[in-house]
Image 1: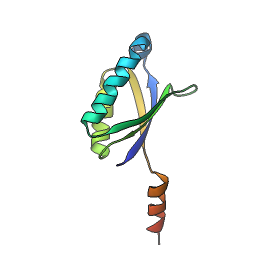
Image 2: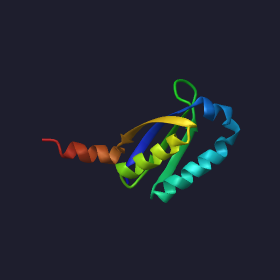
Image 3: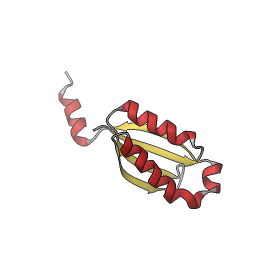
Image 4: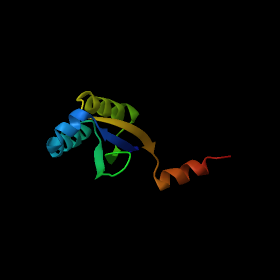
Length: 97
């Protein structure tokens, strides 16, 4: 299943209600699972981004739908990229001329 790395920043609304973060994270995991995906890891981070997640979804459409839905709640903004595993990367290399 395709994997995605999301770089997350809390909005001012998200920071104001930071104590609700565990409940919001549980709701996000539930939304991801409802779309056929899974949150593989969540990390609170220091620096430019407040958190980083690794998720998997059945396809780009499912990932985009869930991430837009989470963003609409106003607590965070994301930058998400498709992540290829080492195995997938090797497979891509095998297809090169």
